Amino acid sequence: MLRSLEGKVLLVNNEYAVLDVNGMGFEINCSGSALRICSSSDVATLITYLQVSESGIALYGFSDEEERDIFLKLTSIKGIGGKLALTVLRHLSSDEIVASAYNTDINAFAAVPGIGKKTAERICFEMKRHFGDQIPDRLFNVSARNRGLVRATVSEALRSLGFPNQKINIALERLHKSDAHVFSSMDESQMLKATLKELNSM
Image (cartoon, rainbow, N blue to C red; front, side):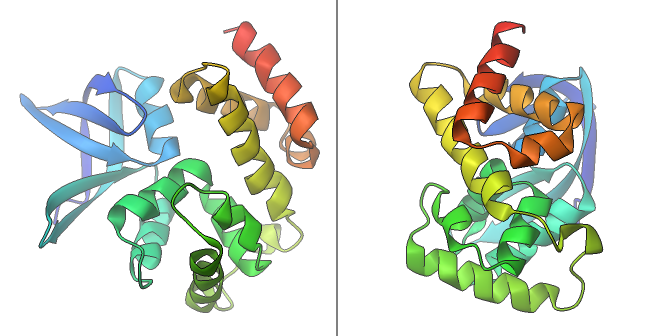
């Protein structure tokens, strides 16, 4: 089982990264946080999952074991394949996914491209069942809308203005790290203004 890879970052785009591991180039379909890791360093270590199916072989990359576990939980849901599960992990962080499922925030999942209301409802139900009593205490009072839907809306608005997804994710991550409490309480307008300011300073 290919559990992790460490190598020189050769290429990063909005969907995958290419790592040179001992002279071999691995194309890895990445989560949002995994893409940020590859974008910010010359050498990256990713947790991986190799999926072999009738449609072919795909290699997925994650920032940590928790993301990989959430990916596997998502793909166990009927109608959610690897590609769609990874799309969820590009638009929502691990905490946002757990919080959205716990709070049955259908809108947070429905904001992800490719997911309709019925699929969002199924994700909430199945993920909540998967997590059971293992929901971290820090997420009990999380507003999933502020952490998920608002961020997704702002990302879409910035993409429509011509900003590349990679830079948008980096800017949003910087804002989140600077003050997570303020970031999670922002509405669309506040987050858009703050992210534009961060993008202009990059």
